[in-house]
Length: 462
Image 1 (cartoon, rainbow, N blue to C red):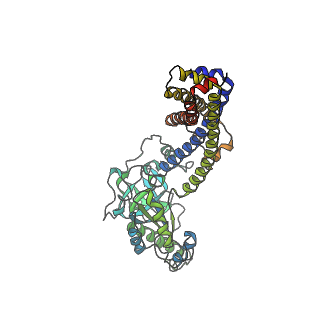
Image 2 (tube, helix red, strand yellow):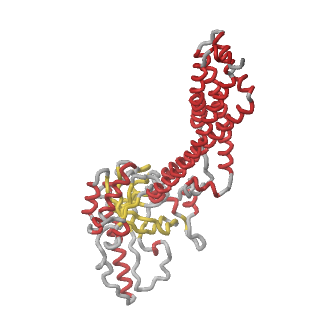
């Protein structure tokens, strides 16, 4: 009876279902855009490595508060990253560990293979495990490791045989792309020489008589780190005191060499603020990162964490999604009004039919079921067709080259990833919601049909 009644009024039924189709397609498409953006953010966060680490930078005591964006309280605070300040960082609620980082670049040579520049990071051995570093081979740094080093996963890939035409390791580029490469040396057992002077790997022939030779020391590799992030995978880690001493020795050598040429630079560090250039702060979880960062900025430092730039993009895309979702909701509201209007007109046109059904013994619940079922059919059919239309729109969005759709990604390059993401649960929820809208819209017309007097309904057309 329901299908026959809907088929009898084909044009009205089609137009009503069309309204549901448009409303459902709008809502599903808008939600799919948001799901795609959320998936993109999740992917970006995964690529960032450990998102619970905050980088704190020191510098000129007059510039740091301005950069940090702190208020009057920040301007009155010291801005030197020293051990006392690190102790304060460790007392901030939500902080697991804080450690200074000293960085420099070194040159490495093992037999006929060389690395022409690799970052050396000085770190407190006691903080490595707390910061999330884990060895895939060997062990982490321990207190008292004066000449030991822990290397990143891609350290060995930077070795290559130098010649007059090669100045970059193709092996390293392949390793960064995840391509398996044949190792040239065993970093755990082969001898590796290290120096902060580039002449370790380049020829000494151009050196003049009064040029001091570079200080060379053996690199004792105690472990290889598991993959963590780009910076860690390509660097080596040593005790911070060892790296600081290496830097001082190299500065003295350079100063002595400059003086041998007649260039007197004096004490270059006498006017510099003491302290570290960078400190790593490890938070308990991602929820603590922003509050810890704000507390550090109040102390007058510039704090940077991986997800801070994503927050503004995410807020912008969420606002855009809410606006477009509101448009879809309005479309669905119009569709609901259309269903209600169709059912009301159906009750009016079928008044005599309703009276006959009551006279021959139809229950009130049966009459209500008839009209509710018709409304649910309109909603469900419209929902199914709307999901189909949204799938088509999603396909067009994902395969189009129009720059207009990039705004849904918050200004991020799509990089071949999906702009619209429709999941199975979204399809099921959309169809169920459309059917519910149909039932809700048909409820009051069904109640009206139930309340009609059987005698007056039969006389309506007489």
